[in-house]
Every structure is written in structure tokens, then in C-alpha cells.
Image (tube, rainbow, N blue to C red; front, side, top):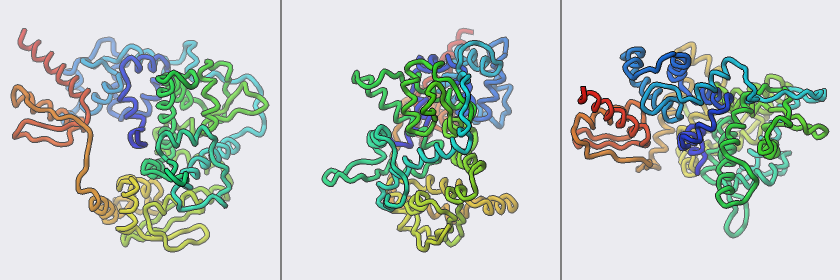
Length: 483
């Protein structure tokens, strides 16, 4: 499975309803999914029906939403149903989600879903700067290991020892890197290239989900440590709800969760003092797992806010992009420079700055490695210099020059005459009216890729939401016929 497919939303959409019922038994999980996974309108719908004394009907929801927002309403309802937050055939919250979200908002209970604070004294040297430095070192070791596989840099002066063996094995199993058939040298794959251009939060989730898949595979084969992927996912959400810098008790965790702690240490998500293993400290990488902000900005902003000026200069990367495709990047980090070299032609390197061009050849090279134009645009946007943001806001213009963005996408199209997507064909409807209703619904929720109204056929990337819609439509028609 690729890193792109490893996004949290897509992973959750493939889970069964019974799995969601187990997940939603924990208030921290329900609250985390509510915070991270739902668009604004979906959150508003959940809060509107959370304390409603009577169930809502589809007609009630249609009256409540403006006529101009029916497309957004259909998308919100489709997301709520795919995450098993509301019932398949009605606008009613599932029991476990409703009870857990109420507990998360109101407090109370003895579920310990949001962690148990340690009563032991906290060592004086463990503070916010220490935890940030620790997490940054752990995560940079992982990124540098992947970057070394590009062949664009060497590890002689990186100062990084590399991740632990368990992380290296996970990167190999997830096909981010691979060994050469004859030489045995480490080489990066197209999945690894895509991984490097993702935001920090997405990178963390990509590795965590690869870990979940590895545990599922080990359990299916009857080997590996006794871990349950559902409990692991619930524990990740619990970590996201903890307070950065506070000490939490390991004794309050179940045995299976205590077995997870060494792996989380390898990722830099938690820190455990060597002289007191009864407490652990979540790092900023863990507490921002369900942040609503852009992950890269929230993590790096937190790192730089309480770090020294020197270390801040070493880590940050800000980019100025001109309409003539010339790029200036204010950067010290060899890691960031290697990432820039993935899709640009670097010409000059000075202390604290590199400059280069975005060319047809560099973009096609990146596309050949599996990097998409959208990933390049997203990376440039998230690292754009503050001056570009201020100028765009003052003049009501996009942050990046549109001519450059359009050309990047055109260069990608030069190499992709045909694109493929997995999905389902829907055809042979009983009547055109039924086809039109189903196709319009698929179009409204954003899963219809192609349709031919003349032939009554359309192609969609997902089936579950359409099946639920067709069942509810059939039930409504039968009710009307009986009346």
C-alpha cells in the first residue's frame, strides 16, 4: 500500500462497523475523530443532534440546511456515514459515538481515556525545549535515512545516527526504501519520494498506519507481539489528546499498550526517562496528531517557538517563487536542500540560501519518481515565505504565481497521457429518473469521476455511500407506494 493510500481518512473508511463500535467506546477516540476527520458542516450537524431528544429525519435536515448548500450537506452526511457516526438509514448518532462524545465534552467517568497523570516528581531537565530537541532528533534520523537512499546526499556530515532497526524494517516493509537486487544498496522508491514531500503530521500517520498493517499481517500469520490494531489506533488517538510536557503514568496502561511504548519511542512520539520507567512524556509529534492546523506548520512552529535562534535558523525553510520559475530558498538543513533537489534544478548554494529553477526536466524527473504536481505545489505553498503570504493577502491574489502552478501541472500531463483510477461502473438502471438521482448524489458527494447521461452510466470511486443512498431511496419509495 502506498503512502498516499495510507492517509488516515482512507484507512478509517475501509474499517468495518464492528471496528468502529470498539473504537468509539473510548471518549478520546470519538473526540479525536470529531476534531480531525469532520468538515465544519458535519461537526455542526453532529452538535445539533447530539442532545436532540428526538431523532432527525432527512426532511428535518433538508429544512435546516440552506437550499444553496445541499451539495455540502450531502458530502457531510456521506462522511458521517462512512465513519459510522450516524445510522445508515437515518440522521441519528450511533450509540457508542454519542455516549463517548458526551463524556468527552462533559467529563466524568472512570474510563481513563485521556490518560492518567503521574504522581512521581518530574526531573528538572525534562522541559519543553528538551522534549522538542529529542523528538526532532528522532524524526530527523528517520527522514535522513530516507533521504540518503535518494543518492542526492551522503551521510558523512549529516550528524545523524539513523533510526533503530525496527523503524528501518518498517520503512522497507512499507516500500519507502528497498535494497538493490545485486548490490544490496539502499534505494528510495516512488512511495518514499512522495513520503518526503508530505507534511510532518501526514508522515507520522503514514508510518503509524504502516505499523498497524504490519501488526495485522503478523497476527494473521500467528507471529509477532500480541497487539491489537484497534487498541493501537485507539491509543494513538489517546496520545493526541494528552497535554504536551506533562508526565503520564505507564502503570495505568494495559499490558498491550505498554508493549507499544518502545516502538513509540523509536518514532519520537514519547519520551521515557531511563531512571523512572513508570512515567512517559508525549512529545509535540504525538500531541499534534489530531491538530486542525496544517501539520508541518504546527509542529515546526512549536519547535521554533521555544528553541534557540540558532537552531531555528538551522531547521526552517522558506521559499520565494517568481513568475520566471526562479526559486530562492532560505535554508540551512541538508535534509530540506535534498528535498528541494527532488523537483528543482539547484544552481547556487550559499550559506543559508540556495537558488535554482523549476524546469520541465526537473518536474518530469520528479514525476518519474512518483511525485505528483499537486504534491510539489503543496510543498511550495506550505513553505512559502511570509512576504508572499502578506503580499497575497494585501492584493487578494494567490500565494504562488498561477502561471507557475499551471505550468507544473502541464509538465506532469506531458508524461501522463492516460490516468487510471480504481472504482465501480453503475449502469442498467430501471429508469432514467433513478439513474439521474443516484448519479447526481455521487456527483454531489465528490465520488463521481465520469458520467454519460445519454447512456445512463457513470463511474464512481466508492460504493458504500451509493448503496446506502439507493437503500434509503428504495425504502422511501416503498413507503410512498403503501400510502
